Length: 227
View 1 (cartoon, rainbow, N blue to C red):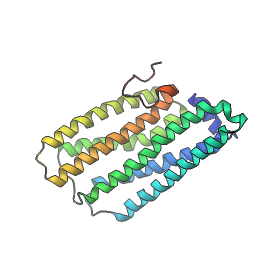
View 2 (view 1 turned 135 degrees about the horizontal axis):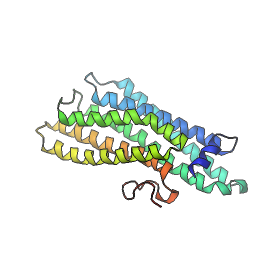
View 3 (view 1 turned 90 degrees about the vertical axis):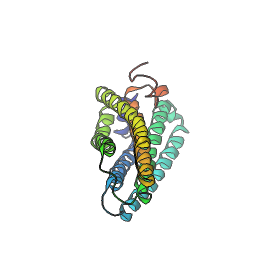
């Protein structure tokens, strides 16, 4: 079904404009996730301009989500659009996950207000940096995988994301057992949870490549590719 949706995006089909809005959402949230990571891990003073840019992108992403919803409702209101119900449902689900990525990027950037100084230089922070690097490397790949409907690549990234998600759960326990001051422990725990949600929503988008419509978002319950 994804291939048919992508074909509609690339044609003069009414879904094409929705596809352009969706692509813009992905671009904006990708920029925000990258910038939020830079702010969170920075050794420099808080960057109010960077946080403001992330918030402004989030406003634009929210507006695009509402626009796509209106477009879907309008399209399905016409008899000619009734056959596109599955594609529209898929699009609405994917849009929801991309919108949440923008929210978590904003949340991550705001952690610096709690812990304005540098994060500790230790193995726990190194693990979190590795997660940031995975997201930074694979978010641009996400767009390519989605556009090509590349099932093999999506399966591999989902498997990697599952492993990372489990490692982030374990990292919370390591943070709790470490001898951090209150600000550091809070900032690291929040950053870990926000990165887990970012990874989770990236995986949810990837399930649009490998899963049927009724199994979208359930990457943690079924193996990708199961019927």
